[in-house]
Length: 156
Image (cartoon, rainbow, N blue to C red; front, side, top):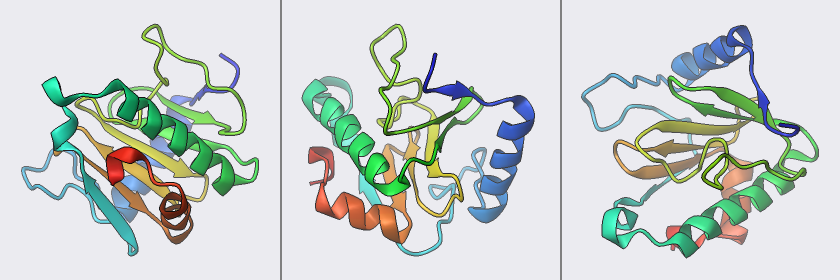
């Protein structure tokens, strides 16, 4: 793997600590809102796109558009891709993405039962994919503006 770099446990743990504190992330909570983002934030309900309504074209479009937004947003800086209770990575959205054995990103944006984060290195902008409540939240001025210029079909 060249682009997606597995984070060491210590580095991953430090980033998760910040996420728990800054966003009051409570993954074991029974509440519908497991996280509190600073404003601005946009939340998209994606519950209509699961099971028999899953559409591979929308899935691919979401990942293509997101990669382009990440590339425009970072100016060559690496981002973090974190999946709760799984491996965490850093990646450069300007480089080709390696895929797993299923032809998917190491951590997908379309959540598959997990809590996935894609965040800039300063954690000011990012995407939270909630695989329990079936939603995707985008937080931070720059990333919201970037997605508004190039919205994935699933957000329309």
